[in-house]
Image 1 (tube, rainbow, N blue to C red):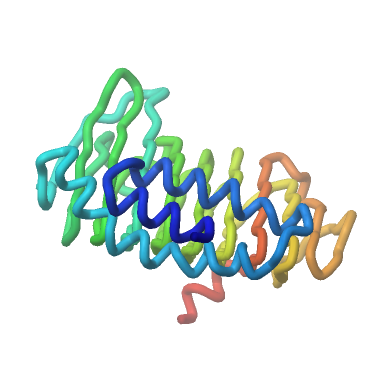
Image 2 (image 1 turned 30 degrees about the vertical axis):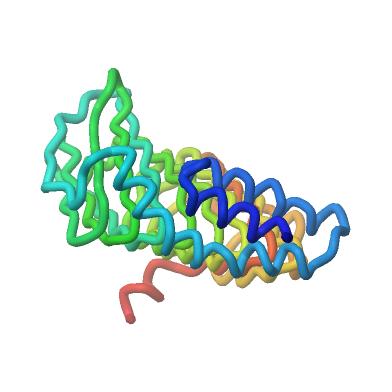
Length: 249
């Protein structure tokens, strides 16, 4: 029984959680850069969709909820959002209120706040999220779609998914993707960037001063390079485009 099947079987039997499955897949995915068989890694990536199909049963039994209701949470200075998504479609938007609002459309959703951290889990569905622009965001996603306007302080770890993210400003942004497609739309950003795509490709179409400009790695700055943007996409595609490109679509 190969590694992928073992992980799928453990999830199906309720022996491990969605988060644990994602970590195992991530660890196995690192095998590609160590020169291990590409067939193993490809098999693991193909298994993400299968994991999404079996996880709802397991999580449903663990948390005793079905579809979450719309929820509003007051946001204070220093708060952060931790979003965990599995096989879901998430849309992010800013608004002028000091509130985090999540509007589930389908799937299993659970949201709560503890101390300064808002934790939201979305499994096998879709949700719209509204939040103030000063809220820092951290996302962990497996096999989903993340779309929308992001805050200047943003981090994401994604496996086998798609992300289309818009940044009006960048303070500190880090993205780690395995086998996915990342598209960044940049507004009037002043930022230093370091983007790598081992076994993948990079399309960078924003005017910039380059220190390194290769097919699988670009490094440099836009304007004075005040902010920080770091992207690593293993076996994936990264596009960095001007925000006007999105507006024309």
